[in-house]
Length: 136
Image 1 (tube, helix red, strand yellow):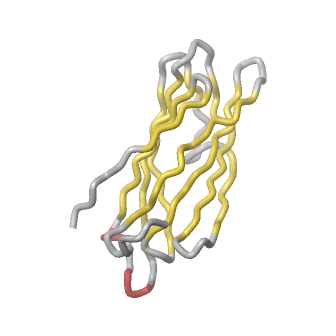
Image 2 (spheres, helix red, strand yellow):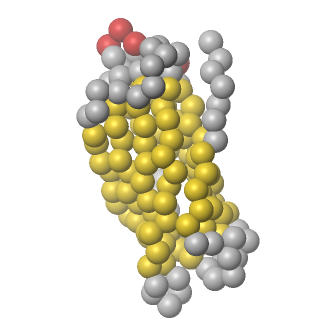
Image 3 (cartoon, helix red, strand yellow):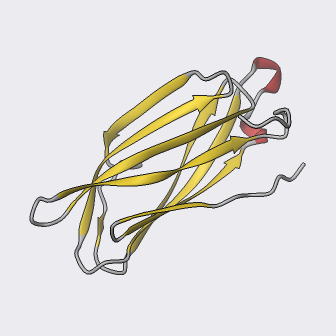
């Protein structure tokens, strides 16, 4: 069953973050309450100052309201520098024990002068066709 894919975007200062989540049915085990998603992220520097992505923070909430938090250096093992007009893309994933949930978070980005900026990652919905039709 194909589900419509949604794209979520937020802009903080000169940084635009776009996320597109995908339910991975082939990597999920419904009978064991193991549901897997991937999400593709694009981070674009729309300004005239370079930024380096230093840290990340994610808050993941399942359909029962259980929250898990993930934080650490960079993303997918990298701390990319985005020069003016450049973007960085990566794909990652997360498991849930429920057929739906949502994620949100932020990136800590730094200018060459050492100024830190917290860049919002848009809240996005993790929905599978195994979830009931009520809104989380």
